[in-house]
Length: 161
Image 1 (cartoon, rainbow, N blue to C red):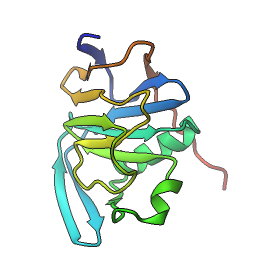
Image 2 (tube, rainbow, N blue to C red; image 1 turned 180 degrees about the horizontal axis):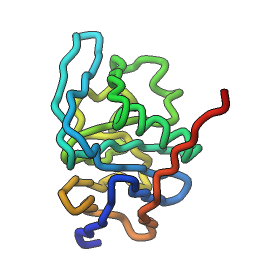
Image 3 (tube, helix red, strand yellow; image 1 turned 45 degrees about the horizontal axis):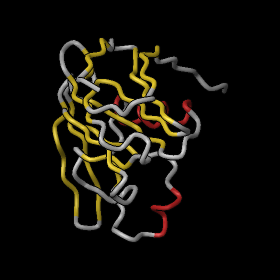
């Protein structure tokens, strides 16, 4: 499939689905430092307003949970935690996050263990997709046949007190 441009506004997110898995992505909307924590130490990368925060759900799950995770990073600037390779918790991660100007989905990496933010674990159904944030929205490259892509409004809910 050819490159496709999707206009994604500040209150919107791009959703890509195929099989049970999905990917949720939105532009950051502001410049901020994102800290990445690992056993080797901490480093920070600057995210620009057109960069993306993406959440992959390789086995499907709750869109609401994925949205909350995305917003923790995008809006509240929560640091990302990188687990060491072969950590037992990796197999229990239902959702994984990446942030940057370009994000490539791969099913050949272990969940939650890749500190480089250009890679994000996905199911084989969505592997190979590359997202790129732009001023206009999001460019989707190498989307497999049968994937459904849509732009959805981000609905924020306020929990009861």
